[in-house]
Amino acid sequence: MATQTERTAGAGERTPDESWSAAQAAVDQAAERLQLDDGMRRVLRVPKRELTVHFPVTMEGGGVEAFVGYRVHHNINRGPASGGIRFTPDLTLDLVRAQAMLNTWKAALVGIPYGGAAGGVVVDPRRLTAHEREGLTRRYTTEISPLLGPDRDIPTPDVNTGSQTMSWVMDTYSMHTGHTVAGVVSGKPLEIGGTRGRREATSRGAFRTIAACAQQIGLPLDGARVVLQGFGRVGSILAEMLCGAGCRMIAITDDRDAVHNPTAIDIGTATRWVHEHDSVKDMPETEPFDRAAAFGLECDILVSAGLQNQITATNAGSVRARIVAEASNAPTSPAADATLQAAGIRVVPDILCTAGGMVLGYFEWVQDMQSFFWTDAEITDQLDRIMDDAFADVANMSDQSNVDLRSAAMMVAVARVADATQLRGLYP
Image: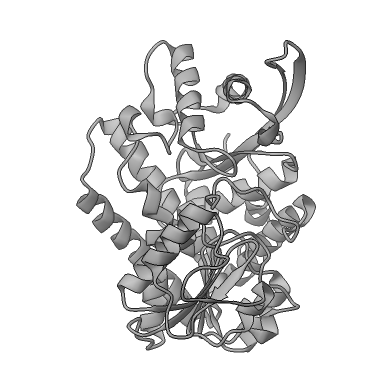
């Protein structure tokens, strides 16, 4: 199965223009509830800086192709910018803007002293050889290097990029400076300054928020029925954690097929099967069913850990779960979210549920800057503490303002960035 960082956007994803307008609308709504003045709203709803680069790459056949890349900083009032680099053929400046803004709120929500960044190259990486991919990565890094630095902008992996890409980015930047700068990226291999715990970080963060939400509504995890949409890296590890807490996984879907066992699916068997067959199809001790029907199965927890815009106005009315956990970016459309809220279903929003990966990126940066590395236990303890505190902050805002968890999460994040902006003032 492809991992969450290896999949390209699906046909159900919002268009880039819609993603940016939706991101700005969410800010406007939070700002209205927080009663921020018009000047602050104007500052928060646009990026601080944007860089568009056009650069050539020599291909293995000897020809030269030109590519377009972007890097956007949304807000850096709470610290250096950080965010993903993605390689996709449908990348646009508006989509990068939206991702950079999301990263600003995500960092603020979990109390990390970062601002939000995002970037990438317009390219279908499947067309590239390994050598061409390295050349493209190094040239793109060189083009955006005026923005990079461990105290300015720390890139992370995103769609179609991973630890090898981050290794090339770090090496290119280090060659330009004349010495190794491990803290310029996160998501690197352990051998060159990466951190323990990265593989399971996003899943661990999602698990902690699901557990906290379940406790809030009085739902014991032991025996809770779970439907999981998306069995990539994040989904499969999260499934192991939930089952380890006593949950029963009654259905699993991937991007093509779905399987069901009303008693429970053995997650160890499922993980091995998908690793060997690249699909949940024909998994032992399960029955196939219509993938689209997964959202309508009666369960306690519905986890969306696949592609964007999976819960829509069309299927939201059929959801029969007490908790919907967004373990991927933007799995629920605005119209579907309204339907779920009206039905009294608790939604753990993506801005909170997926923040574990950003927390681990921060841990890696801190360790690189100190040249002192932590144990697995220390990383797990700190991640759990941060995610638990973040959920508590959101729950408190939800109660105080009488809003849903998604609105509360945005209010907490926007308020923190607005406070930092106000305290720093305007220069000159």
